[in-house]
Every structure is written in C-alpha cells, then in structure tokens.
Amino acid sequence: VTKQTATLTYGDATAGTKEYGNLAYATVTIGDENGSTKTGRIPFFLYYKAVDTKSGTKLGAHENDVFGVGPNSNFSGLQIASPISYFKMTNGLTQGFKLAKFDKNSYTSDGTYVKDLLTIGLVPGDISTSSGFVMHDLVHTTAGYSPNIAATITYNGKTINGTLLFDTGTPAFANIEDPNAATNQATLPANSTVTINTSAGFSYTYTTTSDYNLTQVYNPSVTRDPRTIFSIDFFNDNQFLLDYDNHKIGLKN
Image (cartoon, rainbow, N blue to C red; front, side, top):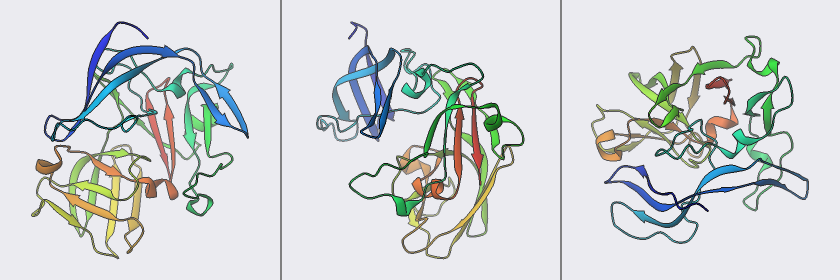
C-alpha cells in the first residue's frame, strides 16, 4: 500500500458514491477448484471509506467493491486499469478478453462454474474482419479510454441519439436515457420492441416480456447520467470482446 491518496467519485455529487483510499499494488489469483491463474503485479485502489453522496450515509464494508474490466487506464490520475489487462500474453496474442454468449439456464444463485465463458487473450481470428465481431474504436478522454459507444436507440417507434454502455453488473433492467421523456421514469410494457444501431454498424433488436429484457425509460435530468445502459440480458443474446491493445470493443449477434 502506497502513501498516494485519492478520492474517487462514481456518478455525480447528487447521485453517486465517493470512495476515500490509497493506491496499492498486488498480484491477483482468479479461479477456483476447477483451475486458477495469476496476474502480474497490478495497481488498484484500496478504499477505507465509501459514502453515498446524496444521503451522506457511509456504506458497509466491501459494499462498493469493484473488479473492473473496463478500458480505462487513468482513473483520477492513478493509472489504474483492469486486472484482466495485466495477464502476460504469449507471442501472437493480443491483450484483451471475450465473453461467449451466456446461457441463463446454466447459472444458479449459488454461483455456478461455466466452462469457456471467459477467454483472456485474443487470437488473430478474434479481431479479424471475418470474426463476425463489429469493432468500435474507443475515444480517449482525460480519464482514459471511454467504453461508451455512440448509437441510435429506437423504442415505441421513437428514435433518439445516445451513447451505450454494456454492463453485466446491471442485473435487472436496461435503462434508456431519453432527454425528451415525458416522465422521469417509465417501464416499457411487455411486447415492446427496442432496436439499437451503433455508429460502427452493429444492430440488435429485442422484445420485452413480463420477466425478460425488462426496460425502463429515464429522463437524464433525474439519473444525472446520459448513457443508455444495457443489462445482463444483452449478454444472453450477444457476444462481447474488449481489445486492450488496440482500444476497441467488439459486439457480435
């Protein structure tokens, strides 16, 4: 643990979380009785306090722990990247990972090992034009490379421009952010159709049901977040790839 301190804020001052802590370094072992592998020495943020910025309530121990997979490499000046980006690659492999399509029937609430779901390290065929992945160049910002992807979103016959974030950590609802939404929050009824078309040409359409592809529409004036976020249901129908070396996200139906 180093003496370099920092304060990290997720969300914003009215609806987010603030962490206080220090820059630290460690190796990380990932796996279980089925097998494991170890990273190199990686930087990470070790926080001793996390506070809800809206209520001022202190969060419980480990309540805000995050194992990041995003492409950022400069978080509040700390040069923190995903632990997955610190695996040593053999010759011919590109630093990155890909997710196979989820099979929701393979999982239980107790936690289930699913073989071949996550592949760390990309072979040339994964990132070639014949792979079927639509590749999206990531934009570099002061906080590193942004995982947000420009797209149009169509729902209930209405099309809006926006940015997309695909997040396995969002478990229940997809959240469409519409600055012209008439209400602050509305849940799309069953049998609603949603279509996304990204700037790089990836297209995906789904239909909501009473218990799957649940989707809410928000006005960003309430959430303070302009991004449309797709939940874990997206990963049941699509594959995801993140190329750390070339700063790209790949999406595949």
